[in-house]
Every structure is written in C-alpha cells, then in structure tokens.
Amino acid sequence: MVDKVRNTALAVLNTLDKNRFQTLDTALETALNKNPWFTKRDRGFIQTLVYGVLRWRARIDWVITHFSKTRLDKVHPKVLNILRLAVFQIIYLDRIPVSAAVNTSVEMAKSSSAPWVVGYVNGLLRNVAKSYQRVPYPDIEKDPVLAITVEKSFPKWLIKRWYRRFGLKETLLLADAINSIPSITVRTNTLKTSRESLAKLLEGYSARIELTEYSPDGIRFFNPSVSIPEIKAFEQGLFQIQDEAAQLVALFLNPQPGESVLDACAGLGGKTGHIAQLMKNRGRLVVVDKDKNKLTRLESEMHRLGIDMVKAQLHDLNKPFIQEQPETFDRILLDAPCSGLGVLRRNPDAKWNSFKQNLAHHHKRQAIMLDNLAHLVKPSGVLVYAVCSTEPEENELVIKDFLNKHEEFAIENSAAGLSLKIHHLLTDTGYLKTFPHLHHMDGFFSVCLKRIK
Image 1 (cartoon, helix red, strand yellow):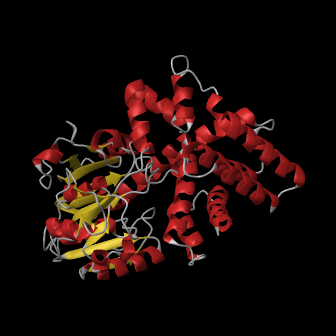
Image 2 (tube, rainbow, N blue to C red; image 1 turned 90 degrees about the horizontal axis):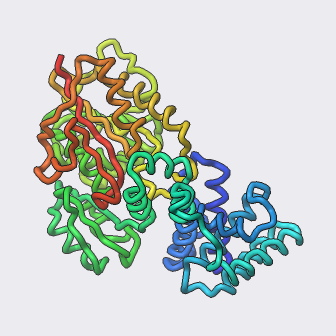
Image 3 (cartoon, rainbow, N blue to C red; image 1 turned 30 degrees about the horizontal axis):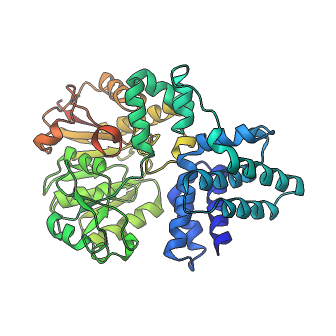
C-alpha cells in the first residue's frame, strides 16, 4: 500500500504537469476517488507529499541540479517528479527513513524507465541522502532575488517584482507566510447558528479553535480528527469553508434583506452563501457562472445551507448580456477570475502555473467583465470588484482603467458593512487589501464602486 500511496502522489504531480489548467484540488480529488480504500493516514501522506513538493519545488530542484550530471530540462518530467518526491522526503520528512524514500523511488522508476535511468535515479538519490546538507545556496547579500527564489522556493519573476515593491525584509516575511501551512478557516452559517455555538461544536474535532480577528463569523481550527464532510456540523449546513479574507468581500458588498443582488462569477458558491445569510435569506439573489457543473454544485450547496432565494443563470461574463431590457441590481459582486497569486499558501501549484505575461491577460479579461456588468447596476447601486491577487495589474490598474471609462462610477469610501477594525485594512483610496504576512489570511483586493449618475 505504501508504494500505491507514493505512486498516487506521483500521478497527481504528473497530471498537474500535463494540464496546467487542472487545479490541485481537482487532481487530488480525482486520484483519491480512484482509491477509496486508502486510510485517513494514506490520504494525509499523499497530501503531504504533493503539497510539499509543490511548495518547495524550486529548492528541491536546486538540490537535484547540484547532484545531477544531466540538465533538468533534459530529464523526463515523470522521472523528475520521482526525484522531487524522494528529495522532499529526505530533506523535509524526519519520520520517513531515508532508505524508504530512496528505495521506493527507485522502484517507481523501474516500473516505467530504462535500466540506465533507474541507475541515474538510484545514484543521484543516494548522493543526495549523503550530502544534501552541504549543498551551497545563493548568497542573499550578493544576489537577494536568486537567494529568495531558491531557499523560499518561488518563481524568480515573482520574487523580483516583490523585491522591487516591498524590499528584502517584507519579501522574506511574505514568502515565509505563504510557505506556512494555513489553518482551516470556516464561516458560520448565521441562518442556522451562532459563531459561539459552532465553535463549541467544533471543539470535539480539533484541540485548537480560534475566532477570526476581522470577520465576525469566522473560525479557524487545526488538524481536525476527521475530514470536513464527516463533521456533523458540516452535514447540518452550519458552516462553509472560506478563508477570512474571502469573508470580508461579502461584508464589503453589504447586501441587505429584500434587495436585488447579483453574484456575477459565483463558482461553487462560497460568497453566495455569505451574501444570502447577510440578506437573511430574503430578497432576490441571482448567481451567474459559465460552468454548468459549478452551478449544479452551487445549488446543492445552497440546499445544504438552507438557502432558497438563489436563482442560477448560465452565462459567460466575457460576453455582454444581450437582453433588450436586462434586469438591474442594487448590488453586484464580481469575484473575478485572476492569477490566484494571493492564495499561494493554499494552492502552491499556482506558483508554477502563473507567469508575468499572464497578468496582462487577466487584466484585460477583468476589465471586460466589469464593462459588461456596469449597466446592470441601479442608480446609487454598487459594484464590488474582488480578486485573490496582490498584483497591481489585477488590482489598482483595473480600477483605474474602469473609472477612466465609466464616469458614472466612483469609489465608495464609507464601507458601511465593515466594522471599525476592518476599516484599518482600507487604504486612503478606499481599497480593501490583505496580505498573508500582515493579516494571517489570504491576499485579497476589493473595491466598492458606486453608481453616482
């Protein structure tokens, strides 16, 4: 079973390499569903291996490069992932015997590679096991960007831009925060219970329970004794999994009972559920997404939460609404598709799937979506734009372009739905910005645009 476990981790990594549009969550879920007999320990080990390799890939590759006589771009991707899995275990997992990490990886290579490749894997890993602690790393004083890139394991282009924006100290803090394993954060479904009551229920599943600092409905907990779907409170619809930063977005939108609200890029419904509970399940809540399967899952999620006010519509926001007299709304939320660079601590695969040139692509798509929604906002209504990214191309620059084009909108700086504590997260220009190293939550950007004409 141990070999099967490691081979499953390898299969997930190979899947992500072959299809960069495949999400880590989906790849893991698919692989685990194929092996329903895996124990909780097996599943936990697979997640540790996959997340570990993705989180530390640049540093692992630096070590492999030091011992390899073959350039890494000449090594078959599957063989390279076998090496990465082994090196991760050798360097980072104290409880795994080095011999087990090496021997199982050699066996994995035997199943699909020529004898000379097996010899290459065997020799390299045995050298790593003996000497990895003596591998030289870049000098941070001579080349801080390369040093952080390697030791903190990030793409060089991303560290280069953070170093220019934030400086050395803050870049190191941000990198360390992203590399830390985050807690599980949930949002209380206040239609069914209170945060205090839910926290008491969760105490039976985790020894460490914390109330979120900024969100009034959030709870953090660590290392639950069972998987989330097995928690009775989850089955009863008492909470949704949602990072604290994401919880602030619906508060920023500030929907009221009886209003007409559009969740314009709803996905699986994390923010939809929050909007509905803030509206006390009263009013009109329309959700839009281009993925029919996501909308089906969203409707199932609303049923679990006890929400019956949602109307789902299939539409691609890259295209304008073509109705002669489209419905208008008091409030619209655009949680736009983005690079995901603000949620790298939860999705380390995005480190290696994001590229600098993609930011311009995301910017263009985000601008199109805002344009296609602007005319749906009622006079004096609001349009909230949000992305899980910390990068200016997807943040301030999108809003600057939108306001230059739409004089009928202005940034709403009052933030009526936010507590005094959350107001401290607002910039002078009215942007809501969060960072992992500053606020112990995901990196988000949000702004409230009010229609003034």
